[in-house]
Length: 438
Image (tube, rainbow, N blue to C red; front, side, top):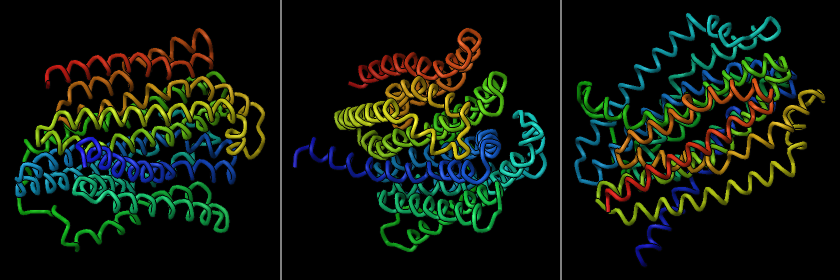
């Protein structure tokens, strides 16, 4: 077998499994969106969309700890430093406990305040607060699930991480339907089902600790600030990506609320949640290549790293073109799925917005993949800048300025414009990094 065939085989295995797993994971929220829209109508959809940014913060924190720690773990493991690798895992568990405690305390004491800050009016306040409180109380499960998924994947068991994600997601879909319809539990049923899903996923992965092929385990060590700091630095782009998604949702919600009221927020909720699934494909590619790039980085195999990046960009473009074509052809039918009450205003806003918004599909995928490349090679600064540009520096001013000029059309345009500009920066930084490493 040639080097190219070997690298492609590993790429195909890791990426395909992680795409399937991430698509399943994205269904945590998409299932809520669908069943809430069917069971509770536009107000329920508005409540869900107002609370979603909190999930982004929790999910991003878990990814930061998991991907950051697993990247360093994989590099140390490839160099034969098993004891230090296990210390990295143990310190990741310490970090998970700290972050989980903070989120739980926020859920107990501050969920009402946050709900008000999100702009929830009297019609949607109670449901929004309920969703937000419960999702925060389940934060330990979400964070630990992301940590274990990252380490299991980097330990050479991508099949198990995929199985865990899919099983958790399917349980969420099933429980969503049961709790919202037969049990008539409303928004609490939706979020309770979502909170149980990571527990199911963790249960699936727990068998790995009893298998001989498992190479990571907690070891007796006190918290090591340097290890924690390196893990957080390596994983920070993953947090920034998720946090930026939450911030963008908050900003877009605020703008759409002022322009079109609750129907505008609900319409954006449809687009944002479909976008979560699309970006999950690109995140699946990125998370699939991370163990490979980290391993090759530890072994100083630069040619193999270049091959992995090339394959991932080709796959991204194929998926992105398919998404754009699908949105152009079927935007009306896609919106109608989430518009159970046939709200004409919601339908019109979402249809028009979807066509413009998803023009950013190709550049967003490229940015996600190149950001993960920098993270996986422990060159975190470009990844930090990419995430900051995408999440805060460009898109927020663009959304406010363009919405003033072109109303809701300007809101939708801010996303593809931002991702296109950041893509140029991402490629420049990538080619600079390649030139330095040749």
